[in-house]
Image (cartoon, rainbow over the protein chains, first blue to last red):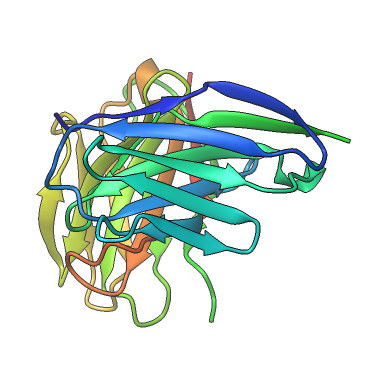
Length: 110
Length: 113
């Protein structure tokens, strides 16, 4: 019940395209859903986050869509750039213990 | 404001040894959490400290322990190292207990030979 399932495992998009990463959770006690971006050799960096009382949150080229009834949320990266090539993790928490998805390795080709 | 710092950045140990990793949280942050990252298991929660007390613990054996000092700095210790302990150990800080926004350090890469 504590799992967060993430897909796809890897994703290749062309520069300027839209990258979409999906996550699903089971635990209805989760009340905060962050996305992290991780580059090789670095720690995860907070990208954007949403709470379940909001269906969508947009920050620049990054948008989270949240479907509370389906217990699913997704990250959309608009106008993807080669610099966005990284591993993306969704996560969920109730309090301060983060439960992470498996990660998606995104490659944006020039 | 300086970010989360972790030392050392890289460590090589042999089986059976013990290791201590250090984490300095963002100034003003009082909660420190530790995570283990491996290719097979992904990112897994180890434990959280707040006000020098362990508040939350993940499913790791007792060989993994930690502590927090009065200045919020934290250390984690792994005793009797096993090959499977090779991982990136990440520290994250947040302003208080139960605070959901966590900021990660660069991690300590531990290799056990």
